[in-house]
Length: 531
Image 1 (cartoon, one colour):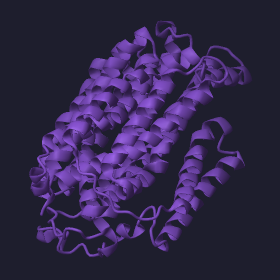
Image 2 (cartoon, helix red, strand yellow; image 1 turned 135 degrees about the horizontal axis):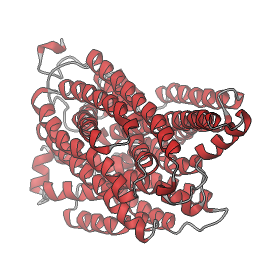
Image 3 (cartoon, rainbow, N blue to C red; image 1 turned 180 degrees about the horizontal axis):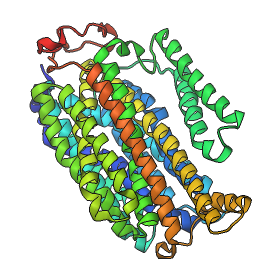
Image 4 (spheres, rainbow, N blue to C red; image 1 turned 90 degrees about the vertical axis):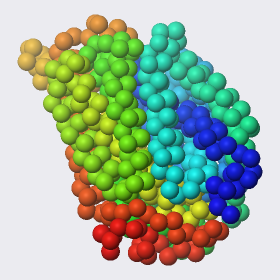
């Protein structure tokens, strides 16, 4: 019996299950933007440095990247519904503790630690939630269902900056507490809809878990610290090299493990491999843009958080609309068209946005912000859905864990690299400005380093000197050009690596991922161009 028939026979509403999963993951989506818009306020209130605030954001992304494969595997072993419930509870509890961050010397450690715990909750919850959606809808309606899933979740994400802008006027702590009522709604909907709790008991690969956590953590840490330590510091290169080496060892070990954390054989499937490369590249721009846009609005444009949040809202306006268009294109014509077009559109949007960033006039940028968001909406969910469709029905949690690991590793890497670029370019521009005003080179350099780290600021955006605003805009322009290049590379990979056609549902019910021959792509797509 098919999943869709089982769903109807069990008396469960597919739409209610979809709604429950949307509310479950909505917290993770809202959190990505609401924290970004509040970052300058949190930084000032707790006296954090710019790198400290970046770590408060990146700790969340790092644990998501490092533990998603574990979460996906755990969902397959213990049951997807159980892991969604557990993940929601952990995420909500960690959010409450983030909101309770004490002022003083312990603030940075406290906030980073519980942001990491939020990430762990998201890593347990998210792959299981997507697996439930995939199990609930058949292949030919899955594209629309997942487009709706990501589109509505994206719309809820767009609420984050707007709500955050007003909430922080009360207290910045409320941006974390807002997750608690969302979690309660999600738990209530799960209890009512009772989604299937399919499981596939197997031993857990803790050796693989240790390797991937170490590899992801060290490689991203090296890039993140390069702005502080400098690329001339051997520790930077050693940290990155050790992290990459651990990831290579992880791949080799997993290939020889009977019950691996990640079944790396699935990467022999060309479509799955290429989609994951595209996702990893695209996420280097997608998540960081929220943080950098929020900082740009509040520092370069000298706007309050409520006004600055509109930049992210414009982005999601394009994202939500085109996510639905992309889902229909996926069901009708396959993944290649929306993914290639979306990557190209995003690249053009980021490039044109960058060209207007130094004008310090939002009106000239809006259309390009919408364009960049539209491109991301057109390609992101479709690349993700097509990758997951390559997995066996009983390995959707594992496949989701893989794609989300790649996505969040890409986001962490992009955040680290682009964050380093921002601080470096900002510091260089300030040094030049101060030198031109008559300050000696050593004094200008020292002052620039202090300003570039934004040591908590003074909390008053209107007091930011004009030359600082212009310098920050120039640094943001370079970051946006970097995002343009990133999406152009993703478009090239999609154009060369993906094949046309709609995937056929050839997976037999009950077949496991280990039983498939993932290198046999032939016969899985209808379009002759696949051959």
